[in-house]
Amino acid sequence: MTTSYAISELFTSIQGEGEVMGIPSHFIRLYRCDLSCSWCDSKYTWVRQDQAVEGKDYTLMTIEEILGWLQNEPRAPLVTFTGGEPMLQPLLPLVTALDARGYQIVVETNGLHTPGQALLDLVHHWAVSPKLKNAGMTDVAWGPLDWLGKAQNSYLKFVICDPARDLPEVQEFVESRGLPSSRVILQPDGLAADYEVILRRLAEFGRDRGYPYRVLPQLHRLLWGIRRGV
Image 1 (spheres, one colour):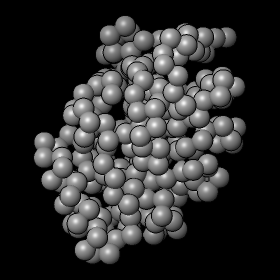
Image 2: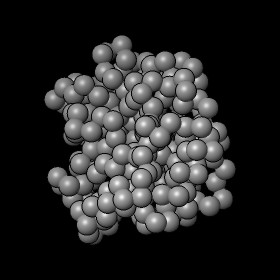
Image 3: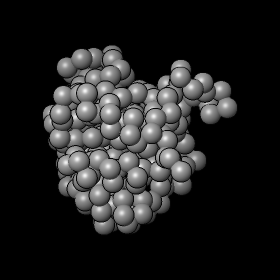
């Protein structure tokens, strides 16, 4: 049986976030999400499944078709799975094929879905983004994230809208699970009009109150603004 993937979009750019910021990457944006964050910058990936239209909201592609697309793109060292929520689709067959061709794999996930050991062994970077109350996800039960200890190069990424409100929540989340503060990245809401202002405000707030977390921008937001395909 051929494995097919519901794809929202494919593009080649640079990684704009986290540990791999600035590295050229192919992006495979998968359709469908199990959350509905208020500040999401890719809401087009979570059109209700019973209302989504193939060919408009997503395209079904086989592994061979995805590999064919990659062959026609300028070579980049990374392939980033983003969404939506990539873990809602069977990543292992596609990741296995990409690993065999020498790509480093990045998976951007909300952390609600525990990957199997085979996938943990193949993925090079896990960007895990639990959602704070500022996303409107107050009824989501976040687990202990024990699997992060077995994941290669994993880090936590939190979107901050109001530093005074959100950073204590980040601290409680991290400390209650025994997660290392050195693996925590904070970034501002990418849809905010005054992006550079709130980025500076976040950096200054964390610095002045002794929070030990890194503050990083969305590099693609600074370079190209609010656009798809970058």
